[in-house]
Length: 484
Ligand code: NAD
Image (cartoon, rainbow, N blue to C red):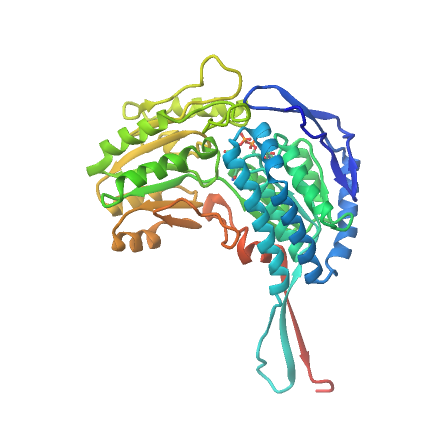
């Protein structure tokens, strides 16, 4: 990419190209070419960001909601206007096709719009008093304070937009630390807020080694809220650090979404939706469908049709070829992770029906769309989030058995089902244990609805009204009659 941006941090309204702790290369995962160098913040630069975020909070939390709304709405508009250019940077940094990167950016504008509007809508409430001596009981939602937002590389604009939209709409200041793999995507998002007129210090952007940077930011007494999207293991570690300072924490972690496919499901539509859902973003999606539980009567037909469609997916460098449907994995570690999943399929039972290896004779971190029939119940594929282009398919004999398998893991982000039976969809909607259940489709993410999981997938929600309230603290102000 010839016009890859110069990566800069934003501290107190100043763009800073020099990282006090050096630089790290940003690599195009489709070609392994170095796109640019990302500055790494020193401890002094992190402390400077914290100090200005503290000052920014004092300004922004007192800014009327309507003013916050106007600036954020403008940021959302700028993001939609710049979507084609930003989408190209996403493709270069993490490999997804333009046709997936473009809607990621424009929907992020809609997410910011919705959360901005909450700044006008969330007026708190008046609660009737129990005694004649009381005049009022008012419940308000106060911004929680400077917020540290830690975002991953798989949706580098959308996941940052959800957090920034909620934090800034609610009146918090923020320090964004995006993934080291995708700094420019996040930077272009931040530029939209700056160009929309956000006051200096309200939004700050830093990069660096994720462990030490996150730990330093979370430990600071200035930080009042931490929001993290990433793996369950890291989420638990960061949650423990946040708890030591009694800081609000929203973890949006991994998942291992089951899909229950009933005999009555519209077969052609269901297979096409499942293949599209599974291999979107090369399977690197926290709500990616990963465990396909298929009624025994249609199991063989489902496996063979699913595998045929998976095999037909065009894999390659999406930045160089617009017809590519699935790009590379984000970095080399993911390729090794795919191989590890396939090395443990549960003894005799698992069979690789298609795929199963890297793509030969090419640079880049590619892995073939892979379908495994009948992996063992204790295999890695059926128990650990694959976070890549591998699908496991197993048969079930009764809908109750399917629910038992679906609910057998500690994850609980998304669960899906395909059926034409009203009774079955009502039962599955109730019985599937997850933060989000979608029946006959895979769309669980919209600006207006809460997105979040339970169990090892985390807690709290982003987007929707909940995405705003997560950056607030509830406060009661009650007034009695003077002199009584
Ligand atoms: P990884 O754990 O190295 O990195 C994942 C993300 O966590 C990156 O954004 C990274 O910057 C951040 N991170 C890593 N260690 C951290 C630390 N100590 N403190 C703060 N942040 C830290 O793994 P990976 O191979 O890049 O990604 C794959 C794994 O990450 C998968 O298992 C998946 O569950 C998880 N992941 C989840 C999501 C999601 O949307 N929930 C997104 C990306 C990655």
